[in-house]
Figure 1 (cartoon, rainbow, N blue to C red):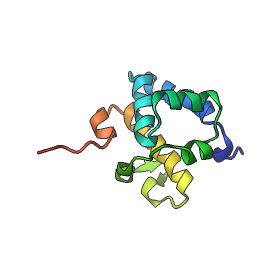
Figure 2: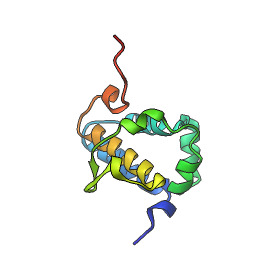
Figure 3: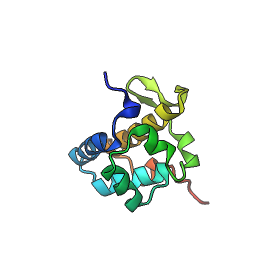
Figure 4: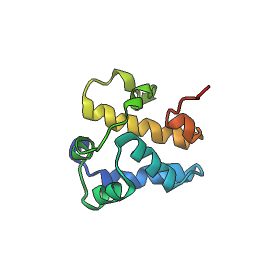
Length: 118
């Protein structure tokens, strides 16, 4: 079995896009989610994909992990995201959960945990 940490992010990225597009969503939305989660700019994200950066490095080098990501709750692959202890695995599962929400038709505002201003 392949270790997810050493897998290149670029090898999984097309699956995120395909999953979203099958449900009528876009690559642009997938990229927006990844940028929101990691703080990468679009150019930085594309460079990470080009460099075939592994997951561990992808998250370790993320410019600014979004503090609102702790609001991401739920189950991915049968495991509660909020119960995952290992930091890199938690980040990977946060991303999986956000892509799942996109594919399930949630609005970008909800996916990106935008709070309403009253």
